[in-house]
Image 1 (cartoon, rainbow, N blue to C red):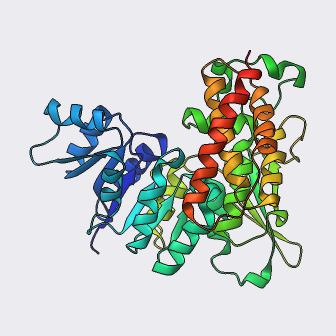
Image 2 (cartoon, rainbow, N blue to C red):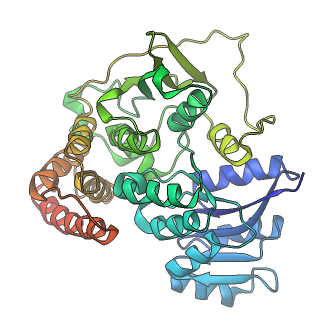
Length: 389
């Protein structure tokens, strides 16, 4: 069997590095043909050499120029720059699957371009479906390309739904770890620090996703993402807090029974499923040890602890550009918290104010979505000044 050529957008992040681990474990099945990142070119040197990657892209033109001048890459390596460079990597002729793991909107253009050239996309950037789910799913449908979800929750649902007719599915259930502050007294949340917020109890993820887990904004984004991936109304998508992160999602069937997918909290499992689908091979991550006692607890999320989840559901109900407003406001709020300009509880407050300030519209074009995104970032940045520490 010929190895499948893949391109990794966001190769220096946690998803990108785990994807490289999966490729390393299956050299006869996977070949890395292209790597892309925002600016951290030094972290691309070793994998580019290891996997003999001939094309590297950096979204930051200055970083690309520095990488070219360094002489650190093998002779003949093409180093591309800017958004166009990321798109070129995503559309390399030999590539059949693109891992889209660039945080934020920078991955939107290359992801759409990959789909339009009939490449399957292993999607880790949930923001893309939140921002432009209508346009991303339309592009995949028109080209006959597959959107393969990398998020562990959505990948679990993807696996659970494969052998079932739609009439068998009553509801989807996303599990949430509860994040770093699931047991913190509510009165103390305003005073938690960035260092505390970045200590996720179960997962090793990037800073933005880890903070989103603590606020459960990530689960709100995932509800919206699931709505587009599985064509399921948001009011039929439930969320439960499952601290062990062993059950990754559940499906409620029409007869009332539930089916679940279990694995250790390692992103290697969903990434490998996307890259090797439909083939199954041993995963390089540890397996569940059933000889050890496993506790599986689930509780409903506390609205007072996780107001961002309710705000995301309200945005999903409003539709149109409201999810894009939620996403952009949350990104501005997390950035302000990370920079020390906003308390932890100010994240949800800022998102709520931005949703009230920026009206939702039904977009006819992608440009209208991007305009709503830009409008929200401006409004949220202004609103953040009034909520600063």
